[in-house]
Image (cartoon, rainbow, N blue to C red; front, side):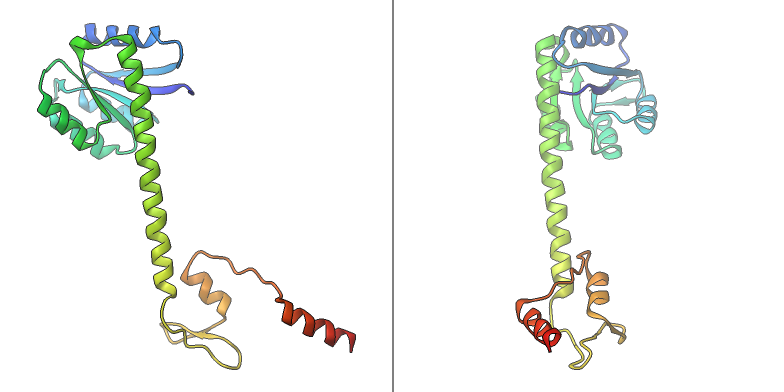
Amino acid sequence: MDKLSILIVEDNQGDLVLIREYLAEQQTCPYDLMAAGTLKSALDLLAQHDFDLVLLDLSLPDSFGLDTVRRVITSYPDIAVIVLTGLQDEDMALQSVRYGAQDYLEKQYLSPVMLSKSIRYSMERKRSVQEKDDLLHDLTQALKKIESLEGILPMCVSCKKILDENHHWQRMEDYIRQSCSAEVLHLVCPACRTELEKDAAD
């Protein structure tokens, strides 16, 4: 795995040092680490740097609980988030995941192996969700293109121009180019090639 850029949002210096030590013990994946002690400073850093993942404490001086998760994920939905907390609240854990967090870890049970696994799994979950979102977006765009080409096209029987919705006559290539992102590839079909070769021979 390539080096991951991680933002640790933690106001407790003892917990911050411990998390850094746990990450340093896992040599299988190098980490580029930055830290913030408040939600405001975390949001400022997220706006300035491209992070892959956020380790987010729920209890910060300027934010607490699910609102902390909501504000980070709403502002930066493409970044994987792992919630870290000293609170033993399973309902809050489930709510955090529903908001979009990839994982939820209680600090008292945290270990180097557990943290490393959570980071790997969270990155994979986030990548999988992003791929599904991209696929859905591509499908939606494709359906829009199909819809734009559905129906009867008024075409001149002589010059083969198409009458668009603004009642302007356009070349077929121009109409297709404006209606969708497809490119027109000019080829010669076998029947026309035969006719052209016959004309050239004459």
